Length: 448
Image 1 (cartoon, rainbow, N blue to C red):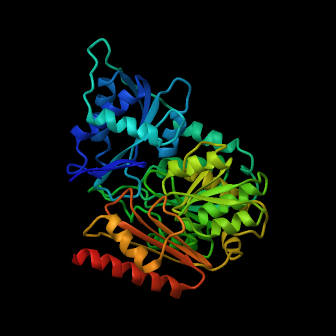
Image 2 (cartoon, helix red, strand yellow):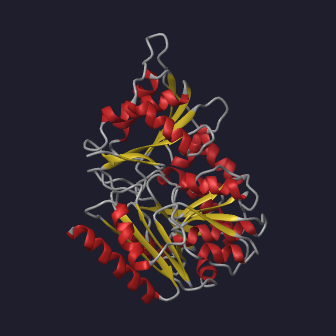
């Protein structure tokens, strides 16, 4: 098996498609790309994290870099620390929403952004070619950095639009045994919000206590805990703390698709301007921007793609429909902390405001998210789909069709060996029809 290499990093199943030796090689190539100097390294809670981290440290030191251990921290914390003066880059050791047997290296430039296309190309050349290793005088030296999460929290509290005090609130934090178990309580305490934690620890065999991805299907425990505790809100995270989903005070799962819309709605009220989301993000984001008379643009899926589109459009707020909010005035990456802070601040804007009442102000879209493995490459599937559905409106990332009242996006995943079908519409029957056409094309390829 080979690892999956994309703009989201290098990920694979530990011991099979991602090994200690391959992690060392990837880190050595990244160290050569950095050209020496300090490189911050953080990891999530996976049981394979220490093994991968040791390999990453060795690879960086062989390239003359000085790895600085941040400990177990969210990916956005690593991104913030990578932007510090004198730091050459960062590596977050996490496979995000993938199950516990997976792990990954997320490679971060000194601008706090996952490697851009030109840097990825240079990295791949370094990975394939011969690299010189430093001798005993030139090898890097390991070190450690403390207080990274505290700095992360302090920076959130200093942002305009973040209400540190006000209406007393109670929340439930579903941390799925990940890095949010450390970060989320710290932020809630700093914002004077009462909290309880569920799914606090990894299982003894290295599995997450619930499905790692914070989707509607995985949040039943959080829904029950919010109702049972009389909380105002529930927050659900992925293992590396860059994505957020919500449950309202009645236990209704609001879900990850509303998270970016909430941040856009909240921020554009005091900082109007264009917003950017990816092609697979709900129409809710367009509706939120329209409330403030602002434009919304779309990018290919992937955090770095959204950030680059934000730079192009002069946008400071946006993100991805998987619950990843990006506020470029804070840092250019998805961050569950800033999403939490904006949700709490919206609730504190009025005594009668609730996440449920806010969500009810939007159209009731139907959305379908499916993924399938195919027996051929995406190009052949794409040809079959175009012959059935017509020419797409956007081909930057698979096939994207704009529909009256919605859209359909079909693309190869950058994080799993699957093809994703995501569609949204005011009329659910149209989605079912297009999914049927999609599966016809898939079945044709599998039969060939």
